[in-house]
Length: 417
Image 1 (tube, rainbow, N blue to C red):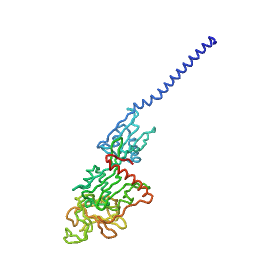
Image 2: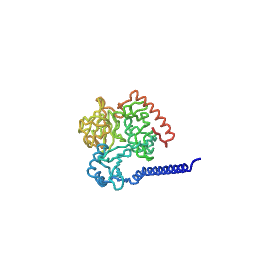
Image 3: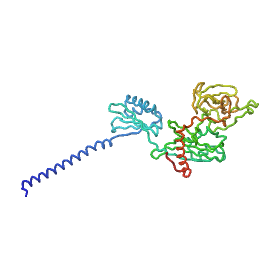
Image 4: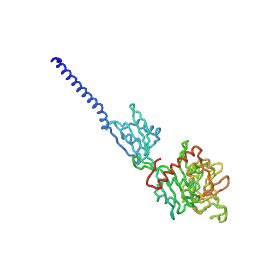
């Protein structure tokens, strides 16, 4: 049996242990509270304001209005230009978000959103220097399929609109198909076509359209089909179903959807001179001032005037091909003899100078020094696929074709690649 003294000592020991346990619990609670309170306080006090750029606004004016110094303004402008490629703000489009640790503190972070897919974060470090970080916004890209048919009196553009294809995508399709067909002569009622193109979403909302992934058109010369493909070297091009380059070095029709008023002919009665002679090109009706793009990349070898052609430009594309554009109302600024031009670059504007009965573009293709019919001449592809890339392309095309077949049955759905 324990003595009374021992029992008292045991009771006192128990009390001491319980007291220590309670004290430790209290300390733990205090530590937890102390640990969480500052971040909660910080979250509650952080202040953010968004400013939409209006007409007349400047970067310096908006920054100064937020209490930033002139030194801050100069440094921020320099960082934005050098590291983010932003030299100015766009009214009614850009927004700036200013973040402060609390409502009374100086701005510590600025967020600029120059596009739906890019965000630029500017932060001020402890030394007062501004740092720039560019963040790419992840896209939810969906491939959608639309098909249509040419009806009596239709143009491809009208049929495409009826099929629900956006205007920008139709323009891209025009540019692709213009290498292989003439939209004035090759479009007939009953022809069918389809387009597979990208739609870009963010947070479930459609932001914009992407690339044309594939296109098919039942042209008079046979079905024209193209697929977009990225090669192993990173370059992107369009190829036919066999992997051959679908983009030719020259376009048959420089001006999209322009009506042909006179075809290539070895014998044609000249409408101004009145006698019969060869018509060495194709005439496209175009109102005065219509921009004329270069049919292919090359170097300007003539920019002049003569009685027959009026204002004309001649471009050499390679060792075999040259093109000529006549009856211009004026030349494009910066286009001179020796100028290198890219495909699609504006070189002049339609008119009626020289021997002409009305505003139009006279377009010629010269191959190895001989005039050829732009509508029928075989045009070289810019590039074909190598053996390894062609194997990958055919595998990719098989996957894409399988997806297209499913979309043909369920056109309201989409696929993700």
